[in-house]
Image 1: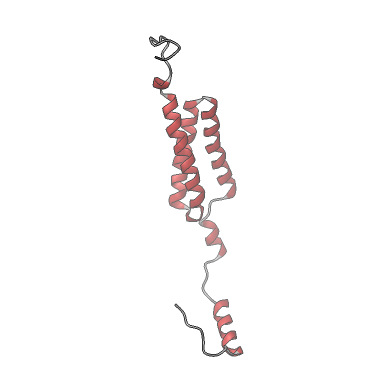
Image 2: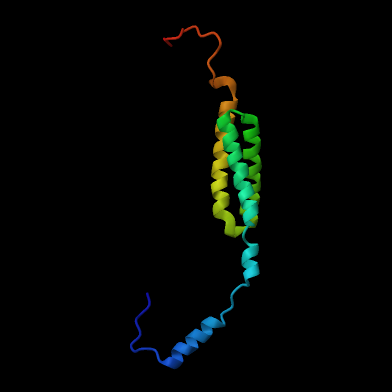
Length: 124
């Protein structure tokens, strides 16, 4: 924990602190921008992800699984290469995994009722 100074800082001391802060080594803006994904690519990835969700809701499971798989692979690459966009990649990975899991479960035919139900319409 830092301690409070005994006396106020003088004008010269404040100017020296300001000068030190002004000449501090900072990365250039271009390098910071290169660590983030371009917004157009990010929008396209969100559209791909939510297209998979829409196709799964609509019952077109194979296409939704393809969209979910593609968006999952692309976001894993983004998570690895672009550190300033990792929060978006995490959100898209969660949505893609949900689409893949539920799309796979509903794509399987074992959840559907059989054509011939020996228990009848009551279910006993």
